[in-house]
Length: 384
Image (tube, rainbow, N blue to C red; front, side):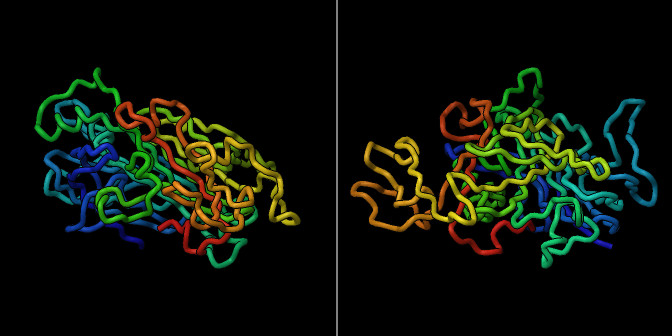
């Protein structure tokens, strides 16, 4: 049986505008930092798993696993908890200093959420959430036919894989919890919007950068032309977010952990913008073959328009002779950044534009990039 250990802890997250905000999160080790979102939990369809949760926070904490059947704790089915006929938790919980265990067997592959089921209007925005990926029973990353989101013959093969979890921050809530003061949710209005616990431009940094110890997951998507990229969305906050990549559609293949297929009928569909609702999950295939790219025409000759070529003042272009993957050349005089590998970028962001700011300052918030590289290590885009 797979055993996963989690600790509920507190910590301080960082925002790109220099703010440091108290939060609650999960850690995978007793002496490690809390993190937002919590550690990715990777499971396999049909294999039992036990998750041990140790609570170091000052109030009861629990775990909900939406979409997972037959969850037990101490050998009994979990159930809502009441004190004096008042609901205090949607499931069994651990008091401060206690450890509780949950056991279940994932019945189907897909993308799922885990989050606190105790006082969720307070604890989930504080950061007690994370993502679950259930691999299909026949999953084998070494064999392309079996490197899929939903199993062989489902049309869900992929080359690389990324998980993006949305969330929001209202600093006044976090300050009130830190100081033990009451907070009225009538005043809840987020000031920060996050992908994988980070606000842009930090979303585009690599995983596990040392100066973001509580926010280990980047949100940069990297691939090569023609590759099938599996992008998983999880809506972990309390708001809906319309996400889209510029210049491309994605094909939605799964919703809330269900493959979009009815028998032999493929029900997947293409979307430019996907509205990620609170608690929802989406599985999508992204594939870039644009700007005239085909396997027979690997170096397109169609020039991009001037707006796409410029990166600063007129004439300061990083375009190197090809719309993508081009020949490298000298960086123009006065340019202080450069396109190191000839990669090609598309923005991916929330189309509710206040959400791409950091407390009102653009750019920021729920924004990242998709980068298409001429070559890329096969270890990039491995979900761990």
